[in-house]
Amino acid sequence: MPLEIVRNDITKMNVDAIVNAANNSLLGGGGVDGAIHRAAGKKLLEECRTLNGCETGKAKITNGYDLKCKYVIHTVGPIYKNGKNGERELLESCYRESLNLAKQYNCTSVAFPLISSGIYGYPKDEALKVAINVISSFLFKNDMTVYIVIFDKASFSIGEKLFSDISEYIDDHYAKNALDACREKQRGSLFRSLSKSSKASSEAYDFCSYDTCNEESELGKVLSQIDESFSQMLLRKIDESGMSDSECYKKANIDRKLFSKIRSDVNYKPSKPTAVAFAIALELSISETRELLCKAGFALSHSSKFDIIVEYFITRGIYDIFQINEALFAFDQSLLGGTK
Image (tube, rainbow, N blue to C red; front, side, top):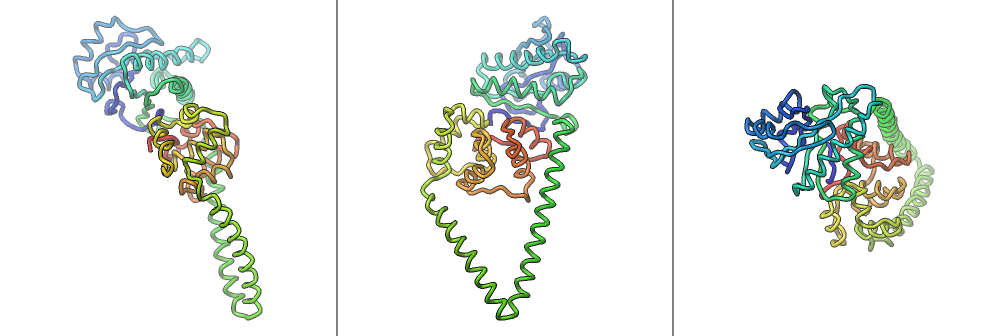
C-alpha cells in the first residue's frame, strides 16, 4: 500500500531509500543515526564528511553502501522544547524535503523512522500525526510506497484517550457478542422444550414458516443483484460520489496497479482490508459498508477486533484512513489499504 506503518528495524528494510534521523554534523550519533551508520559501514561516514553538515529541517542524500537500500536520506529534525518554537514546521520540512529528494532520485519506495521522537523529545503521537499528514499529502500527488518504521511497541502511541475509548468499545462489543451467543443457546433449549408437546410443535412450526418466508423474500432481493460484482459496485459508488478514480484509490491508501486490476477484472476479489479501505474512502455508512463487503465475500463481525475498530470509526463519522490505521496498528491488526 502507498503508506504503511510497520514494526521493523529500519536498517533491514528492502526499499530504494531509508531516511536517517541525523544530527547537524551528519557524522553519526545514537539511536537510529548510529544504527544506520553501523549497518552501512565506514564508507557512509566518509561520504557524509564531504557534505559539510545539514541544517535543521533540511535533507541530504548519500549512497546506501552495505545497507539493502540504494540511498540514505539524512534529515535533521528539531529538538522539541514546548511546541512554540517552530518545531512542527521544521519537522514537516524534514519529511517534505526527504520525500522530494526521494522523488528526484527516482525512488519508488522509502522508509522513515519517527523523526525527532527519540532523544530530541518530540511527543510520539504528535510526531506520528505530522509524518502522516505530510506523507499522505505527498502521496496524493505522487506514486510512491512509503513506510513509517516503528522499532518496538513502546515507540508508538495513538493517544491515551483514543486508545482507552477503542478498548472500551471493543470490550463492550465482545461482551455483547458473548451475550448474544448465550441467548441463542437459551433459545435453542427453549425451542426443544416446546417441541415436546404437539401444540407447542404446531406453534413452533407456524413461527418458523413465517421466518422462512421472510428469509426467502430477503434471499430474493439479494439474488436480484447477483449480476453486480464488487468491482461493478465499487465503480458505481465512485461515480455516485463525484470523485475521480485516482482521488478514490489514493484516499483509500490503495496502490494504483491494484486499482487497475480491480477496474479491468469484473470478478476481482480483493482482500478484506482493501474492500474496507474503499468503504472508508467513499465514506459509506455501516449498512453500505456491509453491502460492499458482501460483494467481496466478507462481513463485519463482533467476534473480530479488526471489524469492531472499523465499526467504531464509521459509526462516529471518522473516515481518515490514516487515523484508523494508527488505531489498527496499536491493536496489532491488519492495516487498511493494500496491494491485493
